[in-house]
Length: 212
Image (cartoon, rainbow, N blue to C red; front, side, top):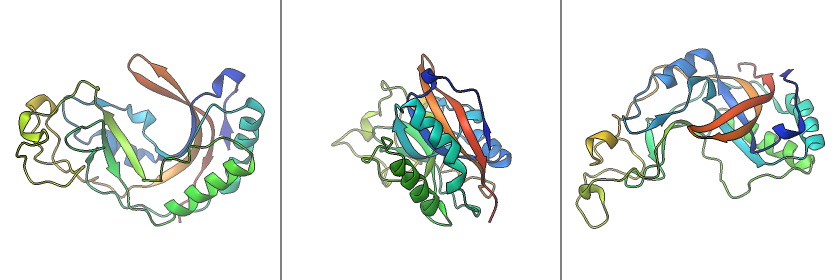
């Protein structure tokens, strides 16, 4: 287990996430996201398992110390094609969703059980939808008339990433698929700081995730 020197001011906007290995991270960072989206830095790509918010420092330190107790071997995962969330007509995120299986559901449940056992806050209103966010759109991003309500748009399911009828700057990428078998090698407790160009994440504690 690795950890950094933690001070009381670190315990804001905390979350626990799986971190992809180097090959997966490099492949994710190279995927197309469209010119209007702001990429997440390659070093900050992650899959959130539990969002905690502000954590009391003493309980946060106990969580960091016990993070290794929820780790179990994790098999390679199955990534789906790139999508726009929450919908193609009002995009906020460019994401790579993952199938819920091969141990992801189990490790998410173990993380949440640990958080609950320590009496820590946890966001109960977000069902687990395993994904990695590649990029974010500014709130000013708007669809073209063809994608607005009441107008004809190309037939696509909500969230898919092809043929959506945006202006060229907002045109979604092709429905690209991750070219490597995705793997995760670290479980990390993060804190998050909001900055002008997006959130910045700081690792408070990390434990290795062995391959299955």
